[in-house]
Image 1: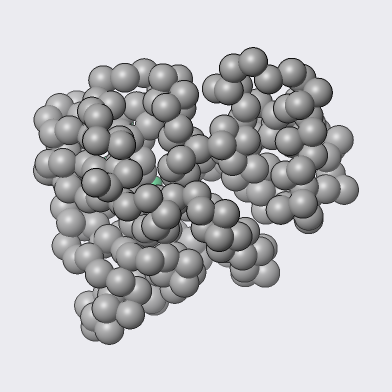
Image 2: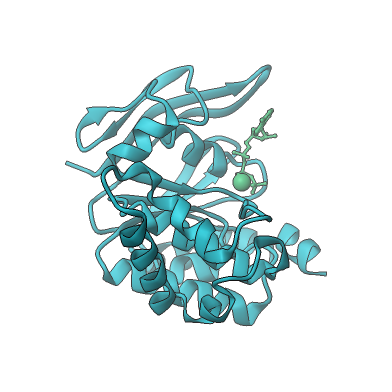
Amino acid sequence: MPLIECKDLVVRYGEIEALHGLSIAVEAGEVVTLLGGNGAGKSTTLRSISGLAKPAAGDILFEGQSILGLGPEEIVRRGIAHVPEGRRVFPGLSARENIMLGASNRKGLSKAQIQREADEMFDLFADIRPFADALGWTLSGGQQQMVAVARGLMAQPKLLLLDEPSLGLAPVIVQKVFAIIGQIRERGTTVLLVEQNARMGLSVADRGYVLETGRLVLTGNPAELWANEDIRAAYLGGHSRAKAAAG
Ligand SMILES: Nc1ncnc2c1ncn2[C@@H]1O[C@H](COP(=O)(O)OP(=O)(O)OP(=O)(O)O)[C@@H](O)[C@H]1O
Ligand SMILES: [Mg+2]
């Protein structure tokens, strides 16, 4: 039984149909990357799993049980943490306080315990340890991204959803973020990662899915996807938004 399974998902935003019957599955312990261009439906897929988007049809099974229609808070409680696009660090809270917020789904923890765990996150995210007490708004994009991922891990999720963690970051910081994803994988956390940078996205993945305008066009392990000329043509030179954001 897969840890998470989306079956024939249809999601509409008004007139726009963002997903036209998408089916994907992730096994426990896997890191799976969703690739695809702008508007392909990658974020919508993650938002459907975390309860932020409401599918018009289809089903989502987590540990074999439907989570369709549950609210985002209940979904976090069941063990799914979502690090959305665009980081969303609270500007007026310190890095440590932002990270501590990630534990709000876990009941019965003392504040001291949460603080201890947040401090342990700085072992994994050593680059931001010196900024533990710095306010969110003073952090760089890469530092904010690390805070956002650390906050997701504080939920101790069975499934971590990461939406474009590399977007807009300098290459050296992207390398660091992906090294951390590699470590998260070694801890045994299952990850569903959205990435436009196919090379980075596949470097940490067991498998990948390629979406195009709300449909699955290709799936396979990184070597298989890499061997596909169309994918290389479409995604190796093709992360135009990342380039636009960086330039
Ligand atoms: N809140 C919304 N209201 C209306 N349309 C939306 C909304 N969110 C997404 N869409 C549309 O749904 C489609 C899929 O969007 P989605 O954000 O899932 O794509 P994506 O693959 O994450 O793209 P990107 O790489 O640009 O983040 C697009 O056509 C988009 O314009
Ligand atoms: Mg997106």
